Length: 153
Image (cartoon, rainbow, N blue to C red; front, side):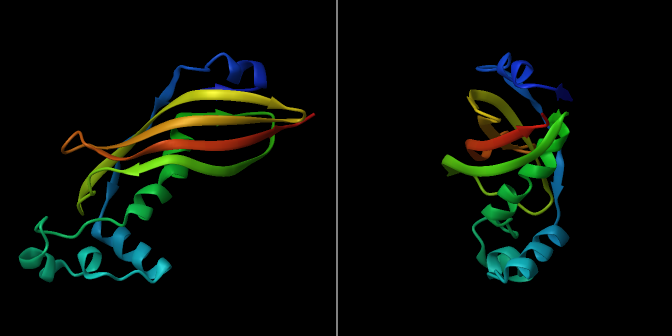
């Protein structure tokens, strides 16, 4: 895990890899919990029996937004920022869904610091991320996430 204490330390990683997360299992239970939380119960996500015969994948798949929602879990496995007042998600650009994540597959995230800007009292980082599927090596999601960090004074 990479530890950052200041803007200067962060800036040293511009254009470089920040790290890779652990593998995270995307179980049917996790898919069902996400369906309940978002009220998105499309059969392709939650109906195991129907998917065996009607889905082109032969089983259920994770919601794309479930895969995205796991970014904070994987992010904290890659980077720890100290001397921080707060951090805010600012958005995601150039985000693309690649291949679906099947129930029971595992994913991990690779990130690099695309660019960093010093904003009087805060820094804005654009972090290029790729979430890949362990079993296939395919990309599930990729994009550029923007975070704003406010360091303690």
